[in-house]
Amino acid sequence: MTRPGGAMPHPSGHEPGRARDDAADATVHRRALLLARIAIVIYLLQLLLNLLRPKVFPGEPALSLFQDSELTEVEGSPFASFDRLLAMPEVVFWTVLAGILVGALVQAYTAIARPRARREARLTWVTIGAMLGPFGLLGLTVVIEYPLQALACVPGTAVVLVLLHAMQRFARIPAPMLLIAFGWGALVVFGLGRAYTNLAFGTLFNHLFEPSAPAFDTSRIVTYVVLHLSAMNVLVAGAGIAVMLMLLRRRGVDAMTGLTLGAAVGLGYCFVEGVLAIKVFGSFGGILETSGGFQYWIRQSAGLLGGMVALGALLGAGLALAAATRDRTTRWARVAAAFATAIGGAVATEMLASWWSRSIGEHIETGGAFDTLVVSPFIWLLPQSPFIVLAVLMLRSARRARAADARAAVTAETTEGGGAITRTEAPFLIDPSMRFWALAGIWRRHGRDPALRVLRLQSAQLELAASHLHRGEDAARAGEEGSRLRAKVMRLKSDVGSAVTR
Amino acid sequence: MSRTAPFRAARAARAVAATLALTFLLTCLALPQAAPPASACHVSYAYRPDIKIDSRGGGLRLGGGDACSTRHSLVGVTVVALAALGILGVAGARAFRKGRAAAGGRQQADRALASYIGAAGESPAGPSGQGDSSAR
Image 1 (cartoon, rainbow over the protein chains, first blue to last red):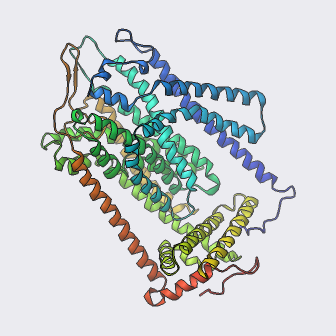
Image 2 (tube, rainbow over the protein chains, first blue to last red):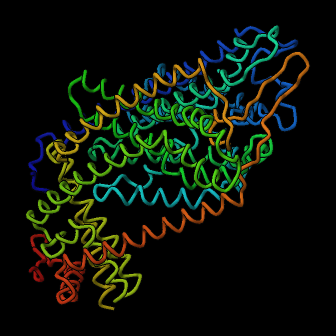
Image 3 (cartoon, helix red, strand yellow):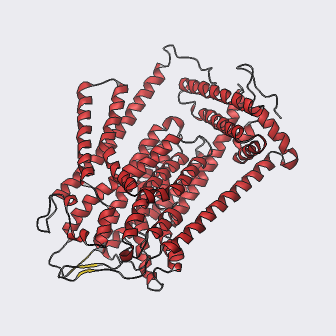
C-alpha cells in the first residue's frame, strides 16, 4: 500500500502518470465514438434495406415509416397498437438525420482543425450526443405524452434505483453515473431499439406479405420483429454499459459495478416501455384482452425486477468480468456469453410466455381473477426465472467480494493513521448492520440532522477507504486523491462534532 | 479489489448462463417455424390473440375473450407493494438487531454508541494525530 501524501514526486512532476491517463482517456473516447458510429451505420443500413424493400401496396412511400396504412387506421386494430409501440414520428426521424449530419460535420472539423486533447475530447462527446441524442426523443415524447402513466411508474422505479445504490455496500458508483445509466436505458436503448425495429418491421412485412394468399398470418412476422427488437435493445444497452465501465476504470471495475450499471440501464428501458404499454394496451384493451392496469401490474409491479432489469444486470456483470480479464480470447468469450445470455433471455421472455400461455390457456378462464393474479404473472415470469436466479446469485457473490474489500480497505486506512478513520469507527464502517444500527441510534438520541451528517461522514470515509484499492496503479494520483478525501472527512467530522454537542 | 472469490463463482455462473442462453436462442430461432398465437391476457408483444388478416374481404378476425381487469390487477399491485414494504421492514429490523448484537448487545450498546459518536465527531489536533482517544 502506498502512503498517501508520502509518495515521492517524480522529478518532472506527475507528467508520466498524467500522460498515461490522457492516453487512456483518448482510447476511451475513440472507443465510445466507434460504438456510436457502428450504431449509426446499422441505422443507415436499415434505412437502405427499407428503401429497397419490394412495394406491395399501391402508392407506397419510399420509407415505410411515412406510410399511413389502412391497417393501422382501423379503430382498435392490433396493428394500430403494434404500430404505436414501434412508432417513429416523422419529426423525430428528420431530427435524427439532422443529428447524424451535425455529428459528421463536427467530426470533419475535428479532423481538419486537429484541436488539443481536451478540446478534442469535448468535440467527441458533442459528436456522440448529436448522433445518438435525437433517438432519445422517442422515449422523451412517450413520457411527455402520457404524464399520468409516467407518474404512476415513478414510485416503483425510484425505489429500485435507491436499492441499486444501496446494495453496492462499498465503493459505490457515483449517483450521477447511475442516473446516466438509467437515462441511457430510458432514452437511447428505447429510442434506438425502436428506430431500428420500426424500419425492420416495414422491410420484413413487405418481404413476407403475399397479396395472392387467402389469408396472411401475422404471428410469424411478429416473432421476427420481437427477435429483432430484443437483440437490438440488448446490443445498444451493452454498448452503453461498456462505455460507462471504461469511464469508471480508475475507481476499479468488478462484477458489482457492471451488475448495478446494467440493472439501471434495464430499469430505464422498462420505465419508458411500461409507460407506453400501459397507455397503448390500455387503449386497445377490449381487443387485446388486457387493460392499462393489468400492464402496470405485470410490468411495473410483479415483473419490475425481471425482464431487462435482470438481463441488464447479467449483461453488465458479464461485461465487467470481461473487462477485468487480460487474456484476449477469454475476454471476447465472456463478452459473447454476456450478450448471448441477455439476448436469449429477452427473446425467451417474450416468446416462451406466448407459447406456454397457449398450452394452458385452453384450460383456464381468460381474464378472471385467477388468470390476472396468478396465471399471467406466472407465465410472464417463468421464462425469466433462470435469469433472475442467476442475477441474484451473482449479486450475492459480488456483495461478498465487496464485504471482503471493505474490510481490507478500512483496515488499511485505519493502520495508516491520520485520524480520518479511527479504530473505534472501523468496525462500524466494515459491518453495514452496525452502521445502520448506529445511524438509527443517533437519529433516536440526537435527531435527524446529526444522523444525516453521520451518514454523509460514513459515505466519505468509505470513499476514502475505497481509494486504497487502486493505489498500485498510479501512486501520485492516488496520493492526491487520498489527501483530498481525507480533508473532506475531517471537515465532515467537525460538522458531526458540532451537531452532536449542540 | 480481491477478485478471486467473485471470479470463481462467476465462472460457474458463466457456464450456466452460456448453456441457458444457447438453449433459449436455439429455441427462439426455431419458434418462427411454429409460433402459436396466445389465448390468455396480453403480457408480451408476441402474446397476442388469434388474429388473421383476410385479404379476400374477410377483414380482421380478432380474439374475443375477457380482458384482465384493472380492478383485479390493482389487488395484485397492493399485495406486492405491501409484501415489499414488509420485506424491507423485516430486513431493517434484522439489521438493527444484528448491529446491536455486534456492538456488544443491549448491555454494551449505549456505551458503544456513545464511543462511536465521540470518535465520529472528533477532529484530531494535527495531521499526525490518531484521534483515537476513544479506541477500545
